[in-house]
Length: 107
Image (tube, rainbow, N blue to C red; front, top):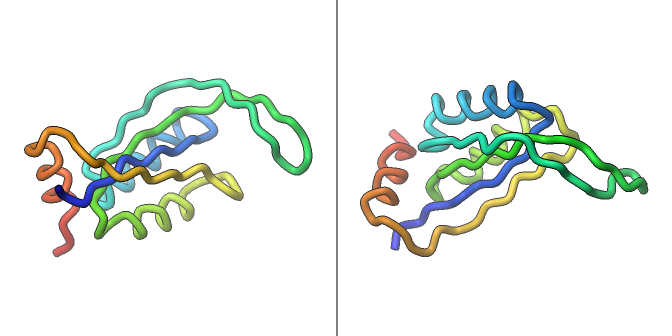
C-alpha cells in the first residue's frame, strides 16, 4: 500500500480555507483539497467553552510531503493552534492513491 494521508483542517471561514487549499495544492504539498463547508464547532479554549462556525477542509497528500504540509498550513493559518490531523489512508482506489503520490512527488 502506498503511503498517503487524509488531512483534516478547520479554518475560520471559507476565504481562509480556500487560500490555504490553493497555496498548498499550487506548491504540490497536497494533491487536492476539498472545502466541506460550514460546520458548528464546540471546544475548550483558554479555559472557556466556545461555540463557533468554522469551515472544514480536507487535503490528500503523501508521506514524503506530510510534514512540509503541516508546517505550511501552520504558517498560513490565522489560529494560534490550528486543527491539523493526518490520518493514514490504509485502503482505497489504487489509481487514486498513485495519483496522490505522483502529484506530490518531490523533484
